[in-house]
Length: 192
Image (cartoon, rainbow, N blue to C red; front, side, top):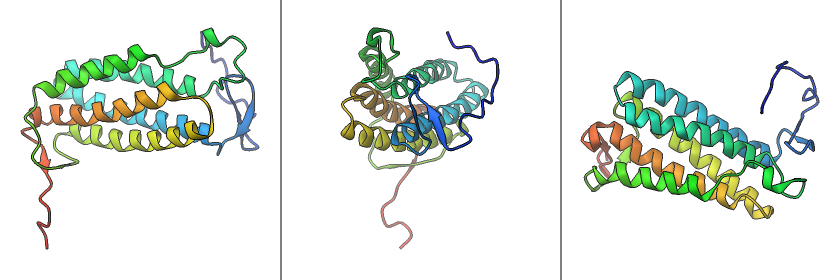
């Protein structure tokens, strides 16, 4: 259980932070950059949820609420080094079930969309626009997690989850654009 009595601790004033294990690392550490970008993705999804609720997209809002909780799990996973976990069974990790749920939601949303005949430009409804922004931030998180995973023997399911999440955010943006009818399509060479 998380309990925060005091928000500032002054322990990061010298440019380091603590991992779940208690180990201190520089705030510019790749692990910190990865879960910081996951947090950025989560904040953007919070804005998308605000717009989804205002636009009456309650089903999408519920999916995004689950994802926001998953992203805190993902941050905890990335903030807990495997080699320093005294009780590995108790560490909070992304599960295959969370990946499977994303795939199922992607399939459900995508099943109602017309196939694409061009790339989609970010935009459309406020919800769709925020989901496109969340997708690009998520892709940055994915690149950081991939780089981190390449140098550490961990984060395989975290990487899989964030990869599916960017796919979900794309499909969800199309869903939020009136089922894809409001998508803004790229016209190659249009302004030459």
